Amino acid sequence: MESGDLGRLILLVICLGLSAFFSSSETAFIALPRARLLHLLSIGKPNARLVERLIRRPERLLATVLLSNNLVNTAAAALGTAIALNMIANDGIAVLVATVGVTLLLLIFSETLPKTVAWNRSEVLAFAYAKPLTAVEFILTPGVRVLQVITNLFTRMLGITNSTGDISEGEIRSLIEAGAQTGAVEQTEAELLDKVFRFGDQKVQEIMTPRTEIVWVEQGTTLQRFLSLYAERNHTRFPVYDGDMENVVGVLSNKDVLLALGKGKMELEDSVTDLLRNAHFVPETKTVADTFSEMQQAGYGLVLTVDEFGGIAGLVTLKQLLEVIVGHVDEERGEAADDEVLQLDENTYRINAGITIIHANERLALGLPEGEYQTLAGFILYRLGYIPEAGEIVEYENLKLTVRSMNGVRIEQVMVQQFEGAAEGAAQ
Picture 1 (tube, rainbow, N blue to C red):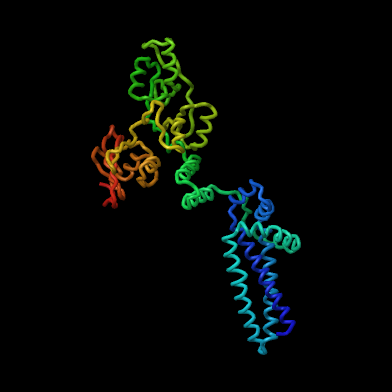
Picture 2 (cartoon, rainbow, N blue to C red):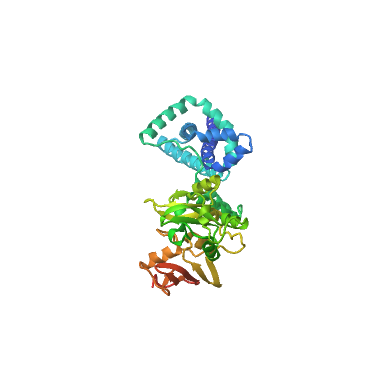
């Protein structure tokens, strides 16, 4: 080998190394998780600001990397061809050998291998490459600017806008799920965080007490009648209507009644509805998060939900909103708020048919599908297609749901049995 060829060979190796550098830098910056970068920025890691600046302008970063990579790859091809022509007499064979040889070298040592390493070591390499890439970007500024202008022109023609780079909710939820799978996040923590996101997505109509299940107090109700009602339905607040349940005049708090009774300001024949507080209304399509924020700031313990026609759709309490995140909460008296779920044996439960599908799945891992219904009763009606009678059965996968009791046309209680294998049939 002549000295000239030795020099070209050294330059070829340098070009391959530079090509590997630019290829791996592209992958390292793309693969670096944005959530991780934000954390490193918050703790003030050296070069974090520089890395963030490069990633924030992807069109400039890619223009720098691709322009540089193409320059060194072209140089490598030219050097490989020159070496082959000097070593092989037949020019056609020499060009063929150079083309195949340089392509294989670039593919293995300048593309596949460095990009694989960069994908697995994205943080280390991104921080190591930040300063050199910034220097290359400065040197190639004219060429990079031209590429940017051309790229921006075509992206505008295609109607493509630059991403803001903000982390999406889906990405955060994926990180939480991955953390739970690897053990970095406890399963209970992952479930709680998932409920927090659901808190912002769910509508009030999905968790509210429907109008048919509201315990009403009529305007003019006496203390004696109210105490009888309170003994039967131990709620803390009751909506009050005058003549028609669409005409809500306020909300009665048991605290106000008991306080007045304790101070001797009320007799059994007195009207408790003189102690009314103002009623507050929200659309049933409002999100749980927005409703919670409004109720917390205004100090509401209960709000009534209104449908699109202006009618009363149901009510929701602050406690119900909190249960979206923390799950079922016992009442102040230390007992369950209701007999929503009663376990009869290892695989059999008696369930209040008004329980939401989400809560039923969370508490018992039933695996019921979500649909155009919100409650277990709605699921049964959807499967049957008609109003059932007590004793009718719906089978779904490994579940057997038996209608245990009815109140008119409303399903009150359901017995749910879980089996090891999938149940045969769909609905009986």
